[in-house]
Image (cartoon, rainbow, N blue to C red; front, side, top):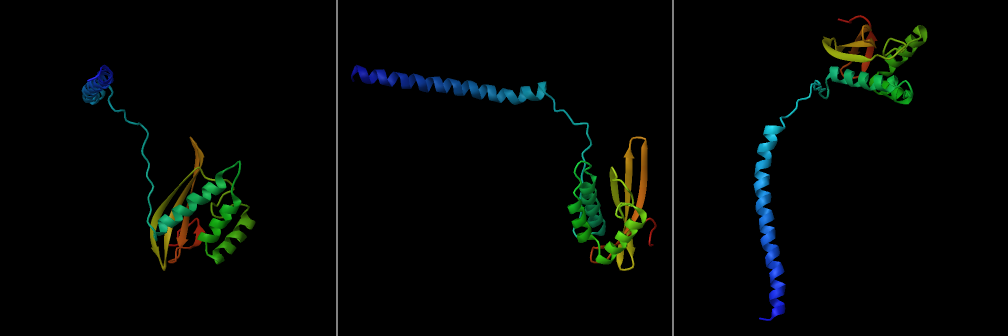
Length: 174
């Protein structure tokens, strides 16, 4: 063998040995890391409550909750309320006959007929109240204000069997 070929072999052999050592040390460290991590860094739990919202297609309470949630979001942005979206939601969820009656009520009372108020609630809930004739009644509780100065309004929303809102009132139809 020539001297030149031995010289070329040695660096590659040294590199292979060095790579093997690095690998061996790396494996030893990696097997110790999880054990050390579990001893020195216990998992921290969040103190915030986990929230969940669910619904089911075809359920009156889900439909009313979806409507009120989207409507309040559209109306509630004080710097830039989306009146176009609020109108589209009303057109989609309300029967045409009820939409006309609601507009008349709003002109007479100077308030939003869906919310039965001049301002937008800070919180809302929708609760199933059972079957009424061919429809279904959902109780919507709106909370206005915050802290110790809150006021609640309870609305009774009647949904027809084709999932359109036919009435919103302050008393139950049951």
